[in-house]
Length: 321
Image (cartoon, rainbow, N blue to C red; front, side, top):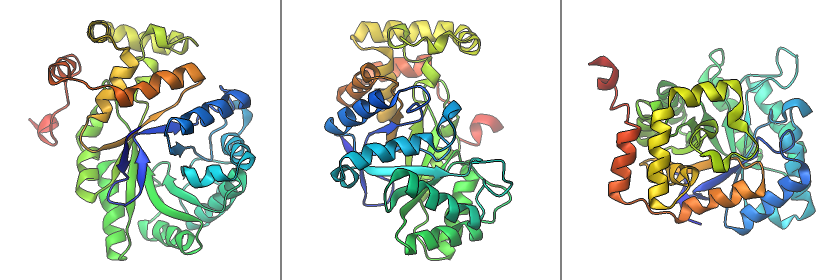
């Protein structure tokens, strides 16, 4: 496993981050525990979750599951960088959501209890809250840092302008500010290259990539045993890009690698990317994802991939002229 600094912080994280959104609603607890153990044994030290994860089992389910896994062996906590998120609704209460200082404090305390830990390494804002002033948000985050409940602050699904606003406000307060952004980015969805990735580079944020396989479209049929791509919406998406996906699958076959492995390996070669978040639903998918760290894509292969999935181009030229 390879390790990279998380943005301008001195923290080292594995370039593959274990995403846990499936744990509980899609992956039963025994299988989730097995995945966690095998991922850590393989060198993954970065685990990402969110307070809302739980699907039909209810919000908080995934954090609670992780808490039980951590409680089985207290040495596990010191071996991992633990990340979770705040923002999404946790109940019908009008204040039990968003990024008010009140909700941030209460949500953090609730996450700590569910996770059975005394601190969170990376506390991320799951989405922007247009009603919350950045001064209020940083006041809440500074309090949590002073209390020893969180160590670093990150964002998720932030546009470039919000990353800039958040960090300029932090600079004015003489604080470290955001150290990471978690963004949608893959071969099919490359709009992050326009504004988000340049903003991350400018302000020294590490980029954590979610949905690196585009919801399974880039995984290839052999890596879709659960039929995730067989839903109506997925079939439409696959149909719209059938020519691209066919060319990509052929390229991967030609170099002897699976499409999912190549898609992950491509991401790990992109300037600014710190970690790709893998979300295996079973141990077989974990084993496949772990191979990406060992794959080297030659320059000619990278050029062919770019020809199949062209970049958006730099902003603002890409959309201005």
